[in-house]
Image (tube, rainbow, N blue to C red; front, side, top):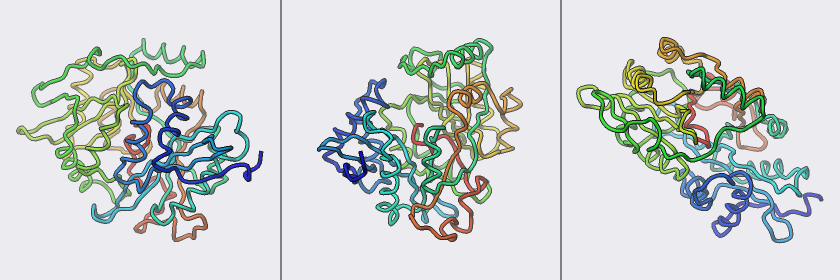
Length: 366
């Protein structure tokens, strides 16, 4: 088939159910939550989205492909001066319509139609099969993902066997209540199933004031209220208090088997609070494995982790690379025909990873 056999266009509100159904047959097939409710949360109710953020390909009246765009807001110097960034998300093409260039065609249309509202495209989930397409669309690799990791010997053996057999990670939904996590107050540490958006936004504001000048994700109270309303979310919220006031937090995303935790977000108004939370988690043996995305080379954070026996490159990252290949972040201006000046934001080169403050929460899969 040729491109002329397809109608490429933007997803409309009345097409959400059809697109969610397509995704539910493929990418989201193993999730129990309503595919339509998850789609609406991610691409339509997203406060940074101007419409259902996605591009579709239609053939003979049926939607056969979709490419989603996860809208986010970032800033450098002021919370009042934000830049809209799109993260390419879920992409699916029906098997009998693949190898027709639809993914790139949808990507090119997105650049044309979204350039006036969104300044930057930041790919956070590209793998070895999709990277060539991103490069053809003019994306530039930033840095490969790796992970800080702390794990038990039993967990390491499980990960090795799973990788050797080519098995994917467990995607079941063991209730978090049935895991080893205890909720409540433990001295200066509070463990909760619910976020505290106002406190978290205040902590992030204080954390940002201490950090180097970088492009940072906007994490205000509205962001936290929406972001952790994710219907697929499996989160545990840890808070560190000083004189009864929350001064640090850490958000753990829990794996389907509840053995593995991913630190998706964190912040502290002063040094020591993240370490205190990690000590609580380790002391209660709540996870067999804890991972934290390592992409910014944050030395103060590494000092906190290495004293608690985290490794810079653990088995999780090794097996991920073995099975899926290197997975770099990739970036480009949204404007299709961009000039050199478009690669700079407030004087920072978006092609330089050190210009960004990137955490797992910046990805669409967190």
